[in-house]
Length: 138
Image (cartoon, rainbow, N blue to C red; front, top):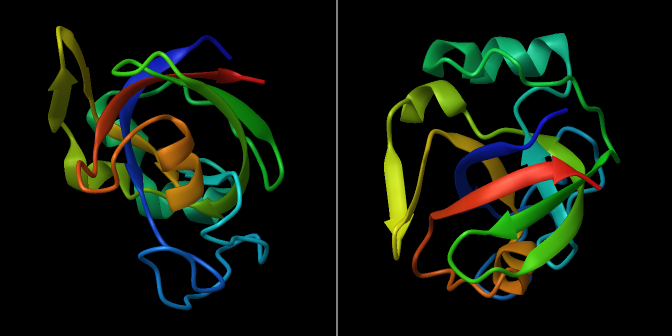
């Protein structure tokens, strides 16, 4: 998979942690807000049918299943984290063309959702909600 520059967001899952109450453990059954994990929009045919990243022009997105590890670098802080897939998401097609920037670095289309622990490890504030990132295989 070639690197993807896209928008990242965060979501709550599993056991209560930080700003999150208890929630479901995601499509993979392992998701916890305090773990270094993320959601990916192409974990299965049924996931892809919900998220439709192709609607936003993202056609080269590789199928990656539960437990696969991505390395993500924040284009705001330069920090890098390695996280594993624990859920399906985000629903990319709802955010086509959405754009977020910091400094002169911008990205469009939500492609990855992090647990609060992983989003924070990128040096990002949960209050900001969105960030441009570069995603690669670990």
